[in-house]
Picture 1 (cartoon, rainbow, N blue to C red):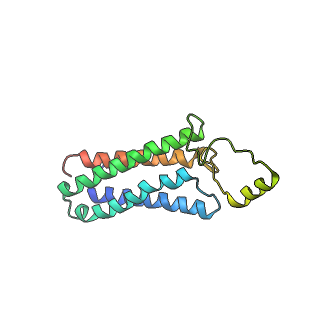
Picture 2 (picture 1 turned 90 degrees about the vertical axis):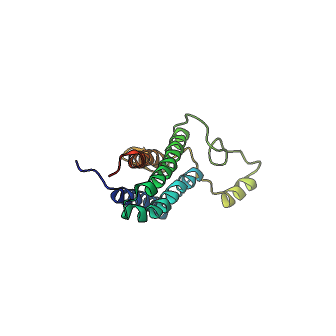
Picture 3 (picture 1 turned 30 degrees about the vertical axis):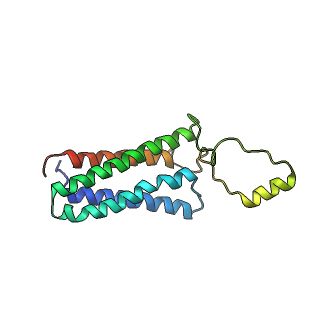
Length: 163
């Protein structure tokens, strides 16, 4: 199997991160509102897109000393994203509690009027109740898997000998 060049790896990372964010936006526009954790899980992807674009000039010139820090940065970004996806998955599976603003029991309103007011004002998407499963996995699980793959690819690119 031929080894991928730095340029091919940068393009691969850019395409996967952009497609992942595009998919998240597609599901949101299709009516699947993201929870607070889902919104936060997008941040590493935005950073990954930006860093992969910044790595492009060094990859085009195959400047290993310049691109290695970019790959190390991408590794760190996607390791953090992997652990965040694992945390969110654990919240969904009730392994541990999630943030109080999007998980846990609902407070009982004092009156019917209070309940009606809450219905009209509060739109909380629960972090512990996934609204969508793809091939049997929630988007939090997919985030963990995709992020782990991107971290592994980035680490491989950062630590390999000169191409």
